[in-house]
Length: 141
Length: 169
Image (tube, rainbow over all chains, first blue to last red; front, side, top):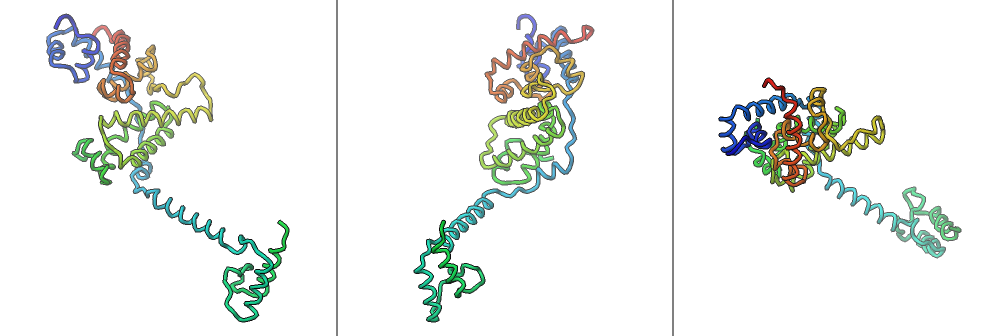
């Protein structure tokens, strides 16, 4: 090797990733060794910030994490169910006065009536629901 | 202390071994929080970045393929998260408009004095080399710049730093 190590060569020796030729030169050259020692000293004075990590932070980071996928799937299923319910619930149906008549007729004849006609939510379908159907069928919207 | 290499830990973590994640955390969390502080200049923000970094690592588990040094992989993640947080903090409390959150903050008075006169990019390369102990290729990979650019920045920085070595050494 001719002459001294260049700056990157000097730093490579300091950092320990020099080539064998660079190391060999540094071993023999007092001037290069002095500069390398100088860089080593500078590096030792560049002190990184020391931040203590609270145990609670570490615990939070290392706590088993729940995957979002099952949660998202459950949320999606609930949304679909709500959508379906909204679409088929009696109040969303277009109601006609004929429905009121048909339900009233079935009630009077003692026939079964779809529980979805329980519009007032009292757990049974009766005359009050018939009145509600009638009211909704003629309501101005 | 887990004796496995970073590559082995990364593989184990990818296959779902929680202990591997804990080992990666044990090995790198101090460096991550210190690096985060370099950019945020704020302890609480640095701790938040630490959490965000490992949360990111957690989300990336299935695709976690370590093709470089762990620090090279983590550096841009930490920097991005820290700079974003610092920018947000600055928008909320614009104390010093001269501060550039993308520039590494020197952390002690002595470090500040040593690096005085170096540009932001020179300081960043010097800190990555001298403090983080990264080799030049790792720095280039982490910063996503050509190796020649790193060499050039480091060379000019070393030229300045050489003048600060006490003459009696």
